[in-house]
Figure 1 (cartoon, helix red, strand yellow):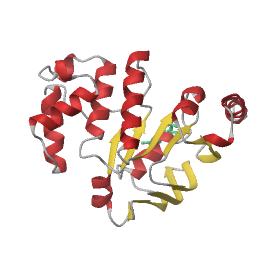
Figure 2 (tube, helix red, strand yellow):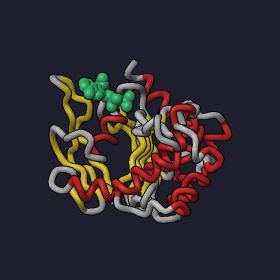
Figure 3 (cartoon, protein in one colour):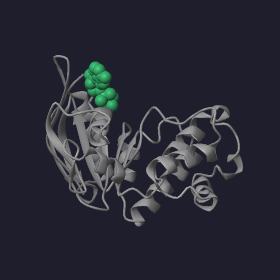
Length: 234
Ligand code: ADP
């Protein structure tokens, strides 16, 4: 569903990603962990075509980000640090707007179902500018899920959320996987990453230094290994 081939990105003289290779199976939830500056956001931006690779390619559902970015955008839903929401539109208007952009249904029943999934239905007619950070983040994830994308790319979807909101987001992800999505998300808490993921990846200084199925490693082993990998670069 998602293939990376020698994917690299340089900013000026500095490499943010160094030749990544990866093959993510459909229905897999991959968690990419790594310290700040490891290249996690850069990776998601390349896959969703917001940024162009300096070398290599990323292929989403058979479509290359280099040759076929329009198709890639149809297949991939993305929630980045910047929420891409309009503060002076209501929650419902934001989702309607993006649905029209995507060419998917913007009927009230569909929008309300999405709002209800992120427990924002009661705020459907309120301006997004009045929302808390957690509410904006949940709405941004709902926006990413419009049109049931085959691939979901989520940059630290849990950061800044309280326990209840984390639970809500986590059930949305479980539901998306059950509906057939493939998910790539970034995190920096190895315990949370372990709980969520089917497959665990660690990125350090633009290089994938760890790639294992969760079933192959215990939580304790993974957390210890992660600390060693990340500690080694400090
Ligand atoms: P992470 O998401 O893991 O914290 P990033 O992908 O944001 O890491 O950043 C990886 C590296 O690329 C960092 O050294 C960062 O400073 C650099 N970088 C990211 N975006 C830009 C940009 N637009 N211009 C220049 N350097 C950038």
